[in-house]
Length: 211
Image (cartoon, rainbow, N blue to C red; front, side, top):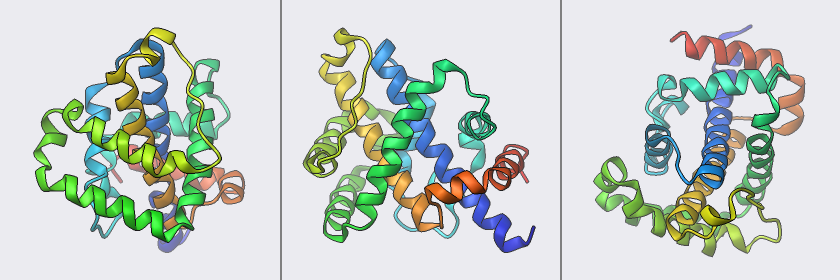
C-alpha cells in the first residue's frame, strides 16, 4: 500500500480506537460505576488538543490507545465477544452523532469555544477528571443531546442514578463524538469501514507495534 494510504489508515484507526474506547468506558461506568483512570484521562486530555499535525498528537501517541487498538482489531476481524456488544452499539451511535455534528458548524463552533474556555485550567484534566466532568457533561447536554437521535445507555440502575457516574458518562460521550468527527475529518465513513477492514486491521497492528 502507498505511504498516503498507510497514513490515512493510521489516522482512521486511531480515531476509531478512541471512539471505541469512549464507548467501552461508558459501558464500564454504566455497569460497575467505575472506569480505568488512565483511559479516561487520555480521552479527556484529547478534548483539549485543538491544534495537531497528526492524529497521534490528539491522544498522546498510538501507545496511549494500545488496548483500544487491540479491541478495534478484534471488532474488525468480527471476533469480538458478546461482552463487547454494548460498547460496539455505543460506538455506532457515536459515529452517527459525529456525522450529524460534522455538518453542524454552529454547534461545532460552540463546543470548541466552550472547550477552549475549560482548557484555561488544563491541569484539572490531568489530575482530577471528576472536577471537570460536570462541565463537560453540561456541554454534552446543551449541544449533542439536543439532536433527535440520542444514545440510550444501559447498565446498573443504581450507578445510572449516581450524578458522578452520569457526569463521567456524558463527558466520555462528548469525547467519543469528538473522535467520530475527527474520524470523518481524516476520511472515515461507514462504507469505507466495511470495505477497508483489512487496511484498518493492518494499521492497528502497526500502531500497536510502534511502527
